[in-house]
Amino acid sequence: METEKTITLTPTTVTTEAASPPTPAKRHSNLQMALAFGVAGVSDILSWVALVPPFDWVLDAVTAFALFMILGKRWALLPGLAAEAIPGMGIFPVWVLVVASILVYDGIKKPARV
Image (cartoon, rainbow, N blue to C red; front, top):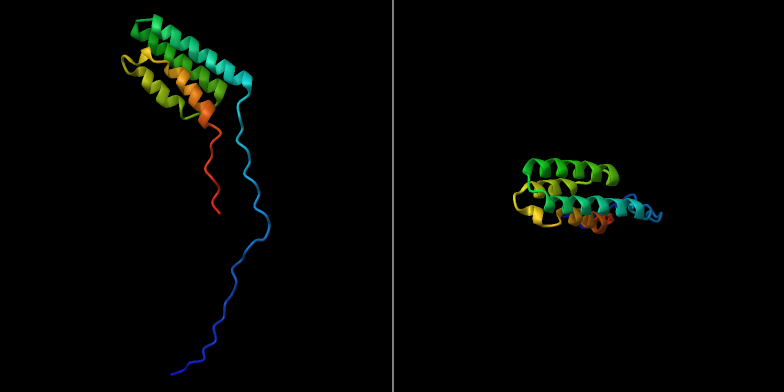
């Protein structure tokens, strides 16, 4: 039985450079957010006043398109559009809540893996 074995350890490639800091999330300007809140507020007020379902559907589609143009492609707009399509959900300020959630959660990114 042989007791003296040679073990060779080869180091893995390790970079000693400092990891680049994560790029900050692109935040919307104050003008964009004010415009988005204005569009959402007007849409929610009009949906409380209007009781005709086809008008509500057109209003929600126009609101979703306007917010898409103002804020860019955001997945949070799609659940807002779906929530507005549910009968009775028009009493809640869904569009204002969608814009507020984009404002709060848009800058949150997953931490980089080390």
